[in-house]
Amino acid sequence: MAKSEALEKLKLASTDSATDSVESCLDCLLKALANNNTEASVKIQEMGILPLLPTLLNPQSSCTPKVANIIAEVAKNEFMRSPCVEAGLIPPLIQLLNSTDQEVLLQTGRALGNICYDSHEGRSAVDLAGGAQIVAEHIKSLYQNTEPENEKLLTVFCGMLMNYSNDNDSLQAQLINMGVIPTLVKLLGIHSHNTALTEMCLIAFGNLAELESSKEQFASTNIAEELVRLFQKQTEHEKKEMIFEVLAPLAENDVIKLQLVEAGLVECLLEVVAQTLKTASDLMVLLLLGDESMQKLFEGGKGSVFQRVLSWIPSHNHQLQLAGALAIANFARNDGNCIHMVDTGIVQKLLELLDRHVEEGNVTVQHAALSALRNLAIPVVNKSKMLSAGVADVVLKFLQSEMPPVQFKLLGTLRMLIDTQAEAADQLGTNGKLVERLVEWCEAKDHAGVMGESNRLLSALIRHSKSKVRHVCITVIQGGGVKHLVTMATSEHMIMQNEALVALGLIAALDLGKTEKDFVGASLVSVLHKLLSDERSAPEIKYNSMILICAVMGSEPLHKEVQSLEFIDVVSKLRAHENKTVSHQASLTEQRLTAQS
Image 1 (cartoon, one colour):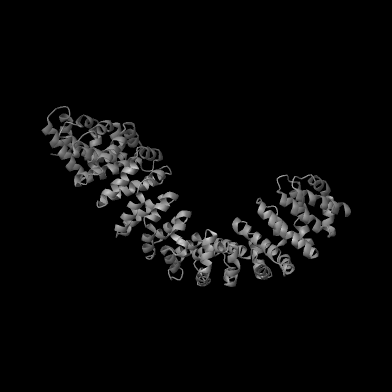
Image 2 (image 1 turned 180 degrees about the horizontal axis):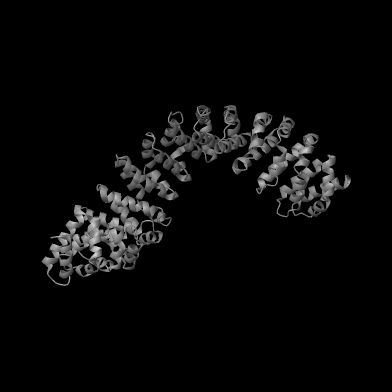
């Protein structure tokens, strides 16, 4: 029977009750769709067949599965989905979901799933008719049945819900509220042997896991155990990647982080990382971002995971080196871990790694290793040990780096190392090349982090040096650093303002003559006037500003500037300040100003 003839006969038969005639027409259409789906679909649309199909979707008719199958095949074409909705096919299809006939349910699920695929109209119509709720209930009632025909039906129903909610937050939220997540997790556990159903579950999880509201529901299930078990079974890289895509959004949740660690995910990932699979190492480092999961893996420095991570640092593989250095940086997030790691010789491993990356090195490895050293240098007891190990000397080898992330970590590491370490501050503060580079980076306006850290290190070199503090001040003055410290005093961050003022106070007290021109050129007196006049300035800012005013009074040009700005009015008001240290310093400063006026 020709296609057009079959369509004409179907038109006539649909108004008749001749089931045999209808059935033969349907068979012909299915054959035509199998042969050339697009061409046959166009013909069906042109001849106005779609509006006839709702009457044929009769739950009692033996033709119904074939009609639903035709709709499923037609709806594979994007241009046919809206016409399917407009022809009124959704309500009778939804009614068929109440059938007990497996073939009817299978073809109906396919038809609805295909109509919903990337179709707003299809999804809206199914939503309006309450189709998703019925399908979700079917999955809940069928998920324990492992018969092949039932697994086929479950695959179709999971696919239908996936097409219905894909990339649509409100429909995904609707499914979450229906409680599909716990059902799908149980389904995954029971049917993990079925590849098609497992893949459909994973895609559904991937969609739902992006929604923040899903995380709590996932956390209340044994999703971690099921995914880890499934991961262990996989031999194909593509399948592992599918599981990773679900794990990554789930691992952002702290409760699930810990569940994944307890389920043995990190041990699985270690095997994969050994094969340099980047996605796995990224996920493993993500798991370490959770405080509880990180501490569980550290196990007082005796954890097998932690020990394995250490073995990656000397590796010749950049991916392993990177993962190892990042892992150490994450383990180094509390003092106890840092002290233990420094005492067990990790610093030497990191220094050897950095030495291998000085010339034409891998920037991401440099950045990760410097991050680890910076974190390890935070506890006071570690500083002198790390300095003795030669950390500062190795870090200085990267002074010529043009990469802002490396510059930023280099500066942070040096600043942490010299905190309270006078000898190191003396040595680095008199290093002309270092100070020259810091002054250069103080002007890196495109990189606020580098600029801020350079200023802070410049100030720290002065504040922490002792026996050579005057030499350090001279090195900073000669290197052109004073103007940057004055600018730093105007920072929006109080801690940076204060660090700048203390450093400038020391410069003024030790070598006012050499720095007089720089102070005038940088409008220091004007800056101090603003800081003292600003009611928002913290007490320590006001206090250190007044100390600095007193220190610069020994310079004639600076003294004149102080007089011209009428500091005495601002200072006299501060005598009534609620902070006693500030009010006392205001009295002393007022006396000094009055005596020298």
